[in-house]
Length: 189
Image (tube, rainbow, N blue to C red; front, side, top):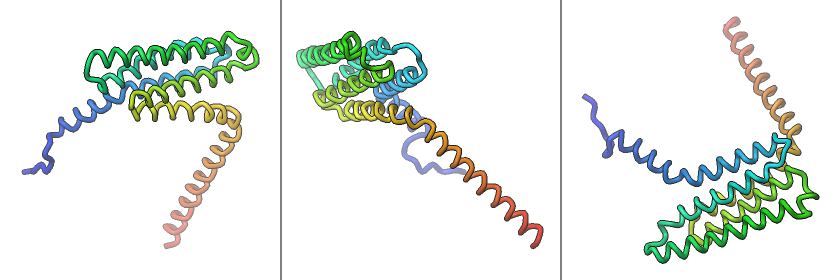
């Protein structure tokens, strides 16, 4: 006879984890969509500015959803929605200005996408500050750090590949010599 020491049934833990994942889904969605945009920018030979401009209203909706529970009355929520709408319209206009101005002509596709990602990250971070949402702040900070990391990874791709090859070679050599040492001891002992 087995005795359960847990106060909660096994299914309740699974349900609790699933509910936690659902609560974090908007932030994860924003990060995943941004990573898709980064990957697309890296491999695309065409400008990806439209992707970042379309992602901005999605980020705005996620920010409004994150801030919704911080406000109790409909009037407060309406003010928050109006404030976030103005906030995100300002960022969207900045993104559009970058893509249609002379600045866009001075930047290649990758650089323009990185600038737009940085603006999106700044928008998410500042929305998190105004909404009192540390999760939005962390998401914005992550996206902000992703931009320079992407630029560095693209420039250092050969170096990273060489480091990977060296690490693999070290692990294979270690595995090879450990295997030979075991067989020599087994044969001699």
